[in-house]
Length: 495
Image (cartoon, rainbow, N blue to C red; front, top):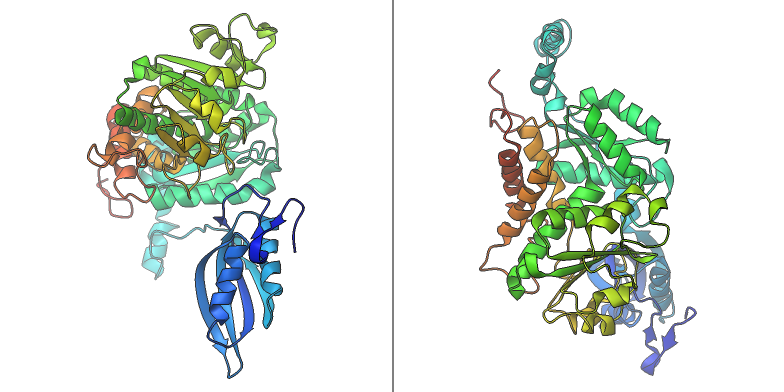
């Protein structure tokens, strides 16, 4: 079955219309019964490949003298592409498609996180110490010295992942219920990579004052606040005011986590091409939360020049309606773009050393990348479809990175936020600072090692066990605050 825009070529091979690459995010398992002969499995895998899918597993479930039942697992590009793959199998003689399972939905059934006790409650003795009457002594100790809550409660190791559902991934304003799967995933990543207990706090309000009041009210239970997927420019005010009112770190991952990872990747990319950061010109597409934080951190690190672009083109001094722009855009207009360039994105990238995209898909072509400076660097981070096709960009740029897990040089926030919070919690930090951000970025960059750097390896793997501890240590050093004992979480601390 062809979809509009599909083409059928030689031997009936279907060329999908989609420009997306197959990924595990659209992985399906198809249970099929096929006549048992020597070519049965080969015909199934060939059909999936002809439809543009990628077979990742073949499992024989059952068989008899005439048929074999197979679970065929494959990556597809999107939901429509998955339907096309199934349709191609259904067209084969002797094949009966019995069931199609979306592996992503199966993974989310019932949610992805749970609460588990850290202490055993096996008898009356343990119950009396964990709960009444013994717990009263701990309550009174905290009442006398509230800072003891950082040692004697979950505040020591717990973060609130707060969202209003107004800017979820690339999906936009889909609300708090639809934001839950992302926040659950974030909490799981905190635990997996940083040993941090995190919990989703999804708010059914997008009123700035209400969000601030709610977060302030629940803050006593947490050692840090991670703001997530809150739309700009509201997110800037929420973060700023919460920082002023709370005595625990407030970290907006869409801003600072992204900025840390981009700076880490750029540090290593510049090492590969041999350009000092103070002499490069960077063009950023997207002046929202992530783009603004990236540019501010690059300026803090001493980048030569930055040009911010968004829907109106390059932000510059004297642009029409400047006084009516958001405070964030006004700041960018006055503090970036040294030569006051006033054109569009394509013009901005001409001669630029670095392009960083945190905006929308397919804004540039390979021909645009060809106009950049020699040994150019392209970070096209829009997901799932980048600002420029990575394959086209590689024809002209020395280094290309994306946000995709199926491409080299994936720039992923999980490299930063677990270690950042691990370090802040260990240091009992009361705020997140630029010094911590710069230290975290350097730690991530240095984890790769000079002997491992090359154009396809500028950031460590998210599964590199060295990353989070290195980031945490760097943040602790930058915090320069009082340290907790170094006993690993779950063991007995010295009280």
